[in-house]
Image (cartoon, rainbow, N blue to C red; front, side, top):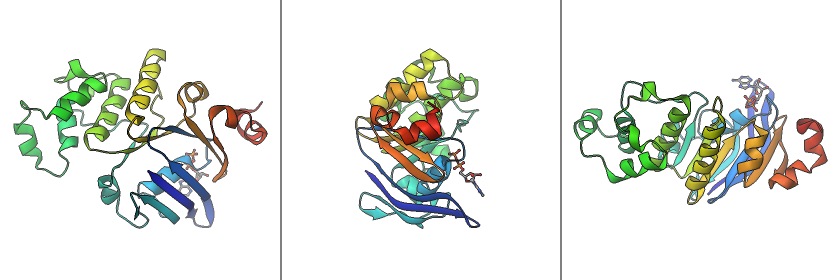
Length: 238
Ligand code: ADP
């Protein structure tokens, strides 16, 4: 769904990302791991148009290098951040409704809150917030905010999701719920997860790409990557 070739991000001569190839496929939860400073966030910044790069990012046959952030988002590439960015004063339903109607007048959206579109209702159930439609997003638990943010990408029709540490700060149960949600939404989308948590990666990754010093050190299944001596040497410490 998304093909990145030879991505390089240069910060004043320092190559934070140095020749990375990455393909994200529909149906896969693809984990991006690597030590701090490996270039994971910068790579996601490049794909979403926040960092300048050389190389190529193609989605649905369109080259996205040089395109504006909002154009890239409209092409279906959605991103979450470690700290969920939701409208705290609006309800769960309103947050989703606004994300579903991005581009329409906010007042029109607020007026029709009693008649939520079917995809908003469906998504609320899917992200486990079906009973929280009228709850202000600001009082949701940390994990629920993360799910809401993912839901906002779903109703906005993102089909490539780039999630930055979606389980940071979550307890065991919430982590498992999040892992299942990722697989559910990856059924007809591509999902990439930047993650530090190795247990979560082992439990839920279909594919893993390990970055080190701005380059791809290894890519493959969890077993392939964990068995790679280079990965063990630089990252897993075993
Ligand atoms: P990761 O997400 O894997 O921890 P980052 O992508 O945040 O790594 O950072 C990769 C490298 O690029 C780090 O050495 C970091 O200090 C550097 N870096 C990130 N952003 C900038 C920037 N805006 N200017 C200069 N260096 C940066």
